[in-house]
Amino acid sequence: MRSRLSQKFVSLIGIAALLIALPWFLPPYPLQLMVMVGIFSILTLSLNLITGYAGLVSLGQAGFFMVGSYVSALLSVKLGVSPWLSIIVAVFLSAAFGVLLGFPALKLSGHFLAVITIAFGLIMHLLAVNLEGLTGGVQGVSRIPRPYFFDAALRSDRQYYWFVLTLLTGLTFFYWSLIESGFGRALKAIREDEAAAACMGVNVKSTKIIVFVISAGIAGLAGALYSHYVRFITPDSFTIDLSIRVLIMMIVGGIGTISGSLVGTLVVYTLPEALRFLKEYYYLVFGTLIIIIMLFLPGGLVSIGKAGQLRMLWSRAKRLGRTGIDRKSS
Image (cartoon, rainbow, N blue to C red; front, side, top):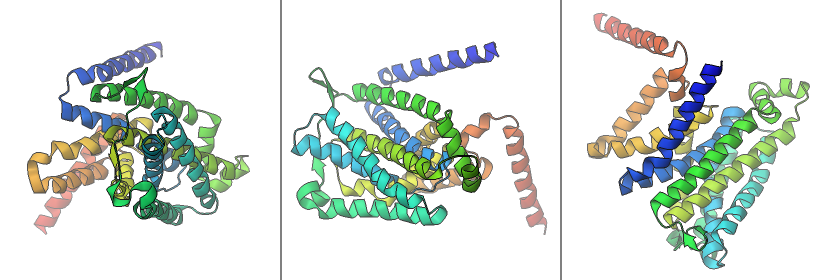
């Protein structure tokens, strides 16, 4: 037992050292991709909390992400508020929207809840487009300032990478402690059976609202980090496609796992860039690879490390091969 713990500790130290030193070895564009992977990992974690642990299907993360982006950007640009304060306000305001969206979740589930969350994202997008006096409409918001330490702004991608990595590490530990707590066990109970969870003493209503608030706040944080990094946002960056993309990140990595959110975001965000050399065919290859992953790894990429998973993959491949041979022979 102690040897396993020591091995995990050494592995974590090695991974931490690698992540910290990574910016020194990456060219500018791959470093930018890693910053975006960190930001979207935070967004994927927020979705995994609702869907993976609570079992509530949400396709409105782009809406919360958008609220955080625009609130922090507008406060910094139009009112001259410190980026630190604007990020904090963005988190709390996004959480407030989570309360509003959490109430329908008390009575709805499955595809009904998914439709409501989609509608929420569409409403946020339409407001950003039509409130031109406030949001700039399709022109968006530009010249968004970066956060700063002691009057030194995080101008370089390397500095912003370490900033995002620090926040992502803290949030990962927060998620882990939350899932391992009584609240996390209540979420899993609701995911399995709401009626049974209520009989066991779980306050289903308050738990659902709380999980929506936490998830929305974290998504708003990711949006604020995004706006201060790219320094220019438009409504086109926050469509339903963004929610679907984050959903794919969560599923590919592994639903209901913290590591799955991180691995899935890394793969789904960087794989299209690695396939750019295929030109107009790269999305075709990317989609095919995602289908293959889901076909052979329904538990996500993190399930590869589980005992017996490789044997199961091999048996599925043999069954598919036999099916193909039988069809040819017939």
